[in-house]
Length: 275
Image (cartoon, rainbow, N blue to C red; front, side, top):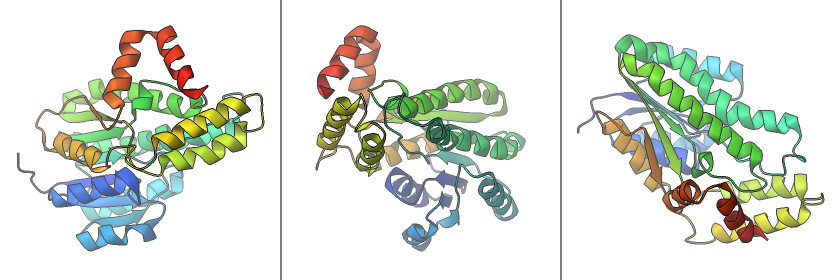
């Protein structure tokens, strides 16, 4: 289906999946607002025709400034891709609650705030698409990932309720659950995990989880971010998109294994991998 000229906001667009998603939507013919804290890393997107803006999704003043700019220049957006996020790893006991709250500010409340700000425009038009990038981690779990997984589980629940609320206004709410993707995610989580839990009662587990993570992200260990960009493109193009898209290495296998094995068996399987 051909896409009429629509406007899309993609958060976390300075690198990884967000950058590739933004590029794909530009190719699809959308007007793309590429948002991230590191606006200087989006010059390539600007060259392609995207409109880069500096946005810290966890900062209210930053959000309000960007929303005001979007409203003035575009009226609103037809597509919101909540991609900005990061992984905070470390034992639940070890991670300071201040850090845990920030994890939720970025991964959950930042997305929710943008939804609250941009839905009125979609409601008025009685159309729109909200795509929340969660993770296979929104359905499964691993030790030392408690705060990260909690934030992604929460975004899944928020998305389900939002889908029911907005259906009456012709607004689609879509969840994308990436698996192992070739991004900096693996290296980013290892440092804090070892900082918080590398010398505590969980030190052995932290070192084993770090090694397992590193091994998983070695060359060829994940799918290309383009896999996720293609899924987002498909969802935007669809008249009636799926409520969920599972994509990327291990995502379908791990989610289905968790579903069919049950808690105890899945626990044993995960612990075997990090002992």
